[in-house]
Amino acid sequence: MDKVFIRGLQVDAVIGVYDWEKQVRQPLIFDLEMAWDIRVAAATDDLIHALNYQAVTEFIERFVREQHFQLLESLLERLAAGLRQEFGMPWLGIRVEKPAVVPQAKAVGLYIERGDS
Image 1 (cartoon, rainbow, N blue to C red):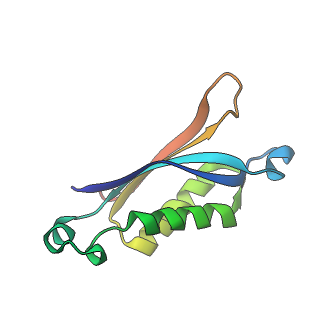
Image 2: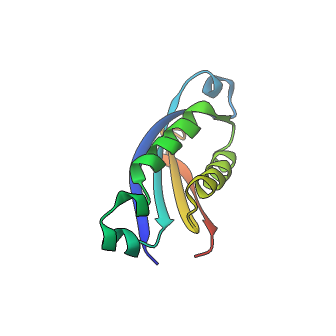
Image 3: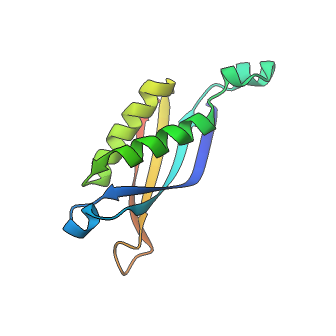
C-alpha cells in the first residue's frame, strides 16, 4: 500500500474543556498517513491523479479553524470522516499533539486509524 504523509502541520484551534481553553487558540500539531495508489500519478506525472497534499493541508486548516471542540477525540473522528469523504482515501492514520497542556509532559495527544488498511 502506498502512503502519502504530512508531518508537523501546526494549526491553531479553539479546543478544550476548561473555560480558559474556550477563549484562546492553542496550537495542535498533526501528522497524517493516507493510503493512496500512486501508480497512475507516477505514470502520467499529472497532479490530477495524485492525492494533493496541499489540498489536504488546506482542508485540515479550514476544518480546525472553523470548528470548536472540547475533546481531541471528537475533533479527530470528525476530521477523519471529513477527509475520507472529501478525498476518497481508503485508509488514513492521524496523530494530533496538544503541546504544553500538562506541565509534566511535552505534549498530549491521540492517534487514530480509519478505513481499510
